[in-house]
Length: 238
Image (cartoon, rainbow, N blue to C red; front, side, top):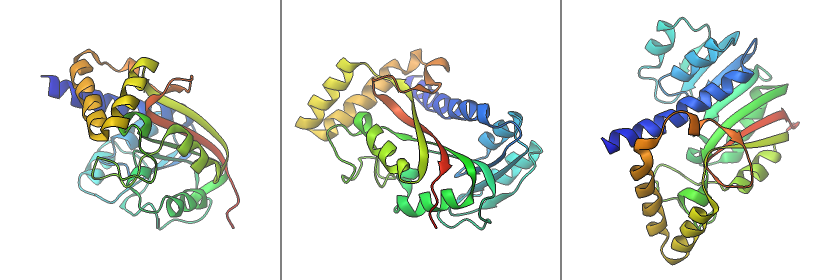
């Protein structure tokens, strides 16, 4: 039961990110990149988007999910670093838990800014390395094998500021300063121990999780488990 609750907690996090993104959706054309099964695309269209195009490398299930919900837009297999799309196409680019998987994050962000309109908005999320891999740097390989790198809050803000004029930082599940200090102490001694301790803590408290703690909130001085960024006005990359 605890394992099921833990998985439900992760699902709540992902769902709540799309609930957050719906606030920006009304009347907008949206690209939902690395969209998975497409349930987020359905949510964005339900939030009033005029069109939602959905792209993912793993196409299985996407077309059935989105078309079953009659979401107007393109559903296709696509690489987020080389999208078959015209410049300045979208009002909003949504992509959650993606940037940490991309070998060349600069190539990815150049493509993000290429397909966004001059007043476009990019909304993304990624694990906060300060919590998930304490006492490591952005150059250290994360313990999660499918991640190329993980970003601290300041790493992500600095990276995104090179591509957008405004970067607003939000977060999900802010942790206490005492817990952060404990993770940092464990990380300095044995990084793997800190990672394991955080996973065990999540497993123990997961039965208490519900949707409300997962909704993104503005950065408040404490560290979040998940970094969320809202970026406005792409810088001219030409």
